[in-house]
Image (tube, rainbow, N blue to C red; front, side):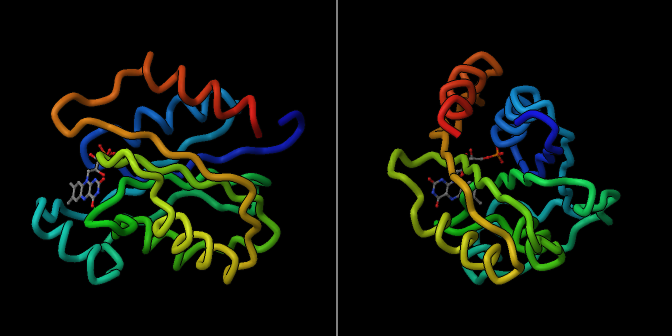
Length: 160
Ligand SMILES: Cc1cc2nc3c(=O)[nH]c(=O)nc-3n(C[C@H](O)[C@H](O)[C@H](O)COP(=O)(O)O)c2cc1C
């Protein structure tokens, strides 16, 4: 990861993906950008819109991917799917020639293969190359701590 430019892009509703994103950005010395919804859509709205594969209405993105080599894309799982703000990000992103890493947080302990595959298919269609993916199981009642995230991220980063 020397002399390459890293960007961590993520959406987070309740902070877990954000904590993991911050630890990744520190570990790879990368920039970090949060995708934000224009307005909160609530739990039910989030669950249904993601189930339907919709694109969330997000605030404008104040960054340009052309400055980066490696893009780390982070999302929580919503109703077994990608969060809707990240659907929007991927649909707008020019990922041609980018190395892409996917990171996911979810409550379930099972590897979220369907979400990885769904994101990977879209990233490849945009010209990106999937390098690796990583997921963190979270507890909906107790947000992940920076210490917990750091330990998991450190282990993962060693492998890439
Ligand atoms: C609307 C909604 C739907 C969710 N659906 C799932 C699910 O299908 N599977 C799962 O394992 N976790 C699910 N979760 C839990 C989140 O994926 C988990 O809490 C995640 O770490 C939240 O990330 P965040 O704190 O960055 O928003 C859901 C959470 C929300 C808010």
